[in-house]
Image (cartoon, rainbow, N blue to C red; front, side):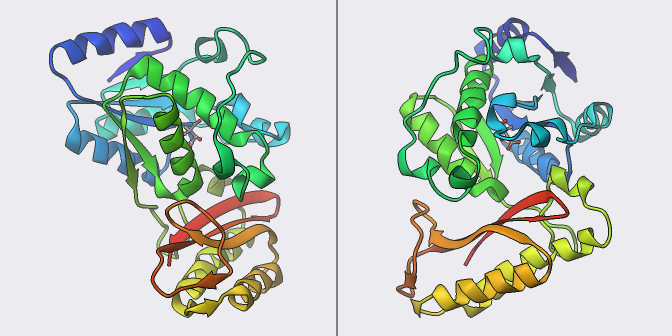
Length: 280
Ligand code: PAF
């Protein structure tokens, strides 16, 4: 496994591999890797000649400095996991490699509706930051295939839009959310959950299963309100819990019985903010 810190060096290396016919798969991460990340890496390894993983905690996607400062980090362990999982190339850039013109001179993307709802509403500027870093990373790596997790469903849609807007040549692969045996979606933030909150946290997945089981055609507001009440009773501060059209994340109050929908939730317990979603 080769480690790169400078953009120019990894670009030159990858251009060389591509010239020899190599296909490049790319897994962008912010570190604190778990089995969910490694499943993306495995998918990439199946379909590409070389797999690149980046670890970079992107400051521009945090609208809250405390959240940025508390973001978990375990670089040595991450590198060890990547090596064991058969990752070919790791990119560990500094802030100045990603933002050579400084953090104040970042580009604005016309994302429209998709950045105004759900995560966008509660984390203003978050998706602009995601686009800034992913655009830069893709311009450095020029990946043939990009691997993202369904757990960040809205982020996947935003990155699809970025790829369209900027005519980027990478193809997106969205991989299923990996869950712990009790149902909790794997997330780097889970390490911050101590007992009894760790046990309480699985109420999020239970609530999504509850929505999946009880969704029926017609008005769905009562169902949503019951789910929010259940989470609040379990000690969560719920930012949002909504049901949306899977194709464009338009929030729905009525279900016609056949449109593909998705439930999405963001809620905090003991100051740890968790997000999850489930196709219904
Ligand atoms: O999902 C993440 O870990 C991040 O948002 C990403 C895509 C690596 C960009 O910083």
